[in-house]
Image 1: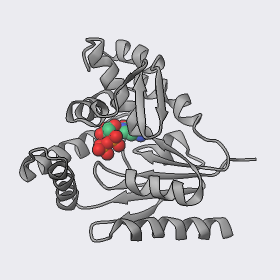
Image 2: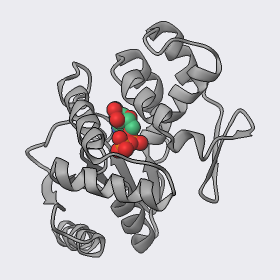
Image 3: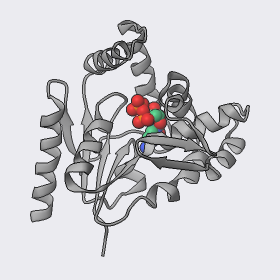
Image 4: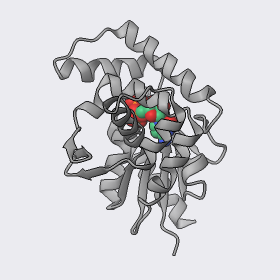
Amino acid sequence: MTVPVIAIDGPSASGKGTVAARVASELGFHLLDSGALYRLTAVAAMQAGIALDDEAALEVIAVSLNVRFADSMTWLSGAEVSEQMRGEAASVGASKVAVFAGVRQALLARQQSFRRLPGLVADGRDMGSVVFPDATLKVFLTASVEVRAQRRYKQLIEKGLSANLESLSQDLRERDERDRNRVCAPLVQLPDAILLDTSSMPVNAAVQHVLDAWEKVKAG
Ligand code: CDP
């Protein structure tokens, strides 16, 4: 039996992580946060003193990542890195290591191993194009740069961190460019994906849209 997959792709800070987690919990499906694996590769490389442009060494790091996810926490080689992997250095590092074909290939089987019954919700940039091209439902979830920058600004301020809206927008634009223009597995809106622009849509509504689309696909 083919295990169903809902692939949710989109740019940084579009809210796809939150939507994916909520959809997975509503359906009782497993969840793959593929960005976490790129972040962990960057964290492991930084810990080992490996340059983020050393493709061969990064590939070795990615293949041998010793990761454990449990109870919303993450361990890398036995040490908890939940906070660190969400930080700015891991985030920028992730988008740098993610350009390398060797790194992406090294993480491919690991991502596909999350596909287990009763189903999987996978979020990232290439879930529908490369990792699960046969996904049952493909969603391209996006929002304008302004809205995404506002959302990230709010998150940082709520965490008690300092933030600057202008530099956040700039950072998102640069990250979008890197994700869209890279040679290997660029971020694209696939022709068979449904488009969900959440610029003026609350999270609940976005979740409901995906659940409705899922019902429709299941009904054939
Ligand atoms: O959405 P955000 O950039 O905040 O974080 P993320 O989803 O955890 O992804 C971190 C970085 O990993 C992204 O900037 C992408 O460059 C990269 N990534 C990727 O290339 N392919 C994926 N399937 C997921 C993430």
